[in-house]
Length: 152
Image 1: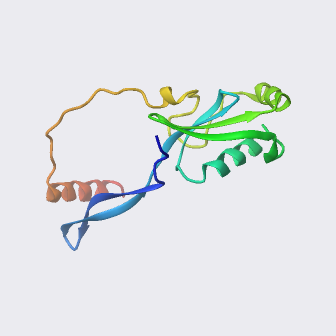
Image 2: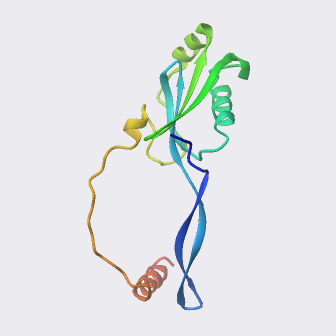
Image 3: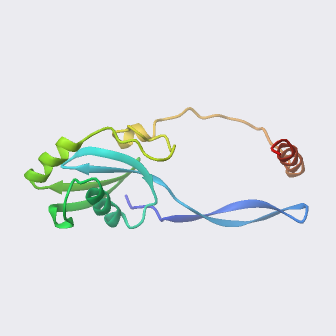
């Protein structure tokens, strides 16, 4: 398994001069990333899958798990079907510090992953919803303008 690219191109429809126009747009990817120390999950959060080594080291320093990057004995990026694990190995001394600091981590945004402790919990199986509902572009545009009038 490989780490997904940090961005992807998608088809889009945009309104230009009163009509729908097809095109492409590049959007960032976000995947669940688990930060583990000596195989114990410390946090799971959404992140773009690039510069993951820097992310792991920076997070470890900011959280006080290590005082220097060299205190991370080993760092392995492990892509899984559920996300990415940033697997770090610490010396026994740093492992004891990390265990003492382990706590519920609440993030500053509402992505829904606060308190999740594994990649499996981050992406549960959801039921498939089958629908043939469709909203033609002109009706969609009218609805958008109606909503806009009510926001004022």
